[in-house]
Length: 177
Ligand SMILES: CC(C)(COP(=O)(O)OP(=O)(O)OC[C@H]1O[C@@H](n2cnc3c(N)ncnc32)[C@H](O)[C@@H]1OP(=O)(O)O)[C@@H](O)C(=O)NCCC(=O)NCCS
Image (cartoon, rainbow, N blue to C red):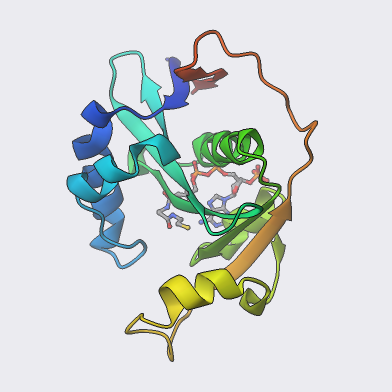
């Protein structure tokens, strides 16, 4: 049986479900822990993938570091929906947000290098992003034992231009097997 899934901008009402999804992976030390309050404060930066019953299956966020640089952050796909292309589509939706904000240089710090490589990112030295190091890395308890790998992608302004049916919906619509 197949299921229609939509990717759209997140709403305040999604914050608890996003936090629960995020923290499933925080429990495995794969992601930073994020409370519903933290997510609410940054809700305009989030996208979610939702099934036709309104259940959030995946999320992702943009985190801006300068007018031209942003991190593709907080990418999470519910384990039961892994391997169906949702991660790739959520990253694409975050990239669309970046382009709409005039940002073409995006990066990710990740423990999932094979995923980012598979979706077209290139491994780079994190020193390329001193804004990230200054804001987050210097104060991090794991700064001398960090095993996250930096990946980056230069976005093209003409990349997969979207026609939005409403301001709420980013019209990626995928059919998950
Ligand atoms: C990493 C994650 C987001 C991938 O989501 P997903 O929906 O399963 O990925 P997709 O189905 O979109 O896969 C896209 C491509 O990446 C590859 N891929 C995905 N996860 C992979 C992994 N762990 N190792 C190797 N390749 C992987 C897929 O094979 C696919 O490649 P293909 O198109 O050449 O076949 C998901 O496993 C997840 O939520 N993990 C836990 C949270 C996490 O670590 N998030 C990253 C934080 S930066």
